[in-house]
Amino acid sequence: MSARADNVADMAKAAKSTFRCTECGWSTLKWVGRCGECQAWGTVEEAGAPAPASVAPAPVSTRARPITEISVETAEAVPTGVDELDRVLGGGAVPGGVVLLAGEPGVGKSTLLLEVASMRAQQGPVLYITGEESAGQVRLRAERLDALSEQLYLAAETSIASLVSHVDAVAPRLLVVDSVQTMVSPEVSGVPGGVTQVRQVTGALIQIAKERGIATVLVGHVTKDGSIAGPRLLEHLVDVVLQFEGERHSQLRLLRAVKNRYGPTDEIGCFELTEDGIEGLPDPSGLFLTERTDPVSGTCVTVTLEGQRPLITEIQALIAPTPLPAPRRATSGLDTGRVNMILAVLEKRSGMKLANMDVYTSTVGGVRLAEPAVDLALAIAAGSSFNDKSLPSGFVAIGEVGLAGDVRAVTGVRRRVAEAQRLGFTLAVVPKGFGEPVPGIETHEVEELSEALTHVAKHPKRRPAEG
Image (tube, rainbow, N blue to C red; front, side, top):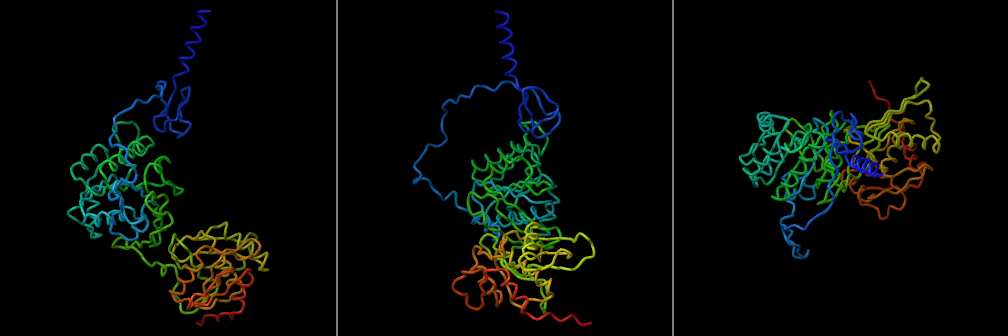
């Protein structure tokens, strides 16, 4: 019996030893060549049993005080000098706050941050750490952008230990790290950009920012599907997550707040990428409209709300017969599923025969529209193209279209109509229950999609182009 007991003890002891992935921390009871979590090869190593969880009291850094005695002066946002960025951040960069800026390669992240660093350097020292370019390359870009300043310090480093030395020497008010995936920590193993390294580096940078009250901006890479590369823990650790978006062939750039502990997440910043850098666009509606003298069929203007900002955008539709058995459905800037739903409603509720028609829909200026408030404008643009009848000049449509062909109310209709009136539009089709009219623009309330389409049918057919 004693020998058997020894065997049981040995088996229990052997069961305590585990194997753990050095990249993501995934654990298993037996060794495997490939991690079951991050799918990395050769990263699973034997690890000892975890120590019993016991926490002993330790000295505190600062004593707990009543919340009414806590000063908020050190947590107030400081403007960065770029109005569109301050709009998204909620007033500016907060001392000790850590911002993660993500975007596709070439969208203009480094250009934007270099201009921000130059602006902020007028108020105090700024440290710009680049891990992807040399200091000379960044200097050339700064000369092109006219972003040179005596208080802007630049260093090309990839070690978090060297970064700490630069912070001690410069004592910056703003720290920019481009990018967090290139930084490595000697305390942990793993390749640069790996899960373990990114987690360790980000934790160290957050500790530096909080202890010294330095506003910190980290540049992050994105994956093929547009999400932020690295573990989701990276987004949970930082205070603000910003997404920089833009089409490669378009000058428009949009900055969105995915997470913001210091301000709203429904604001966007609009920028224009030019040869001289990135410029903020306080009124970007002109980029989303086509300049033409005569109305053209298949186009309709709507007003979309991006955060609290109304934007005038134009939707275009082209419907043409096709000899192919499977007609094409192509979209650009619009949700494909939403477009197919609107086409089905038009065919079912309005009698349009679209089964043998190619349908192409797009937006102007490279903007992406996803909210349901653009449904009515999309349906009217498709009806205008199908009947080859242009809409009257100064016409705008706002509303959501249901599967029953009803036009539903959307948020902020009055604000949208007021923006359209400010830009010179004179006629608006809106959902029922709009309320008091807006001076300077005629509003027509509709309950059904068929009522809205009558505006297309009543307008005379456009004359063919001469010559």
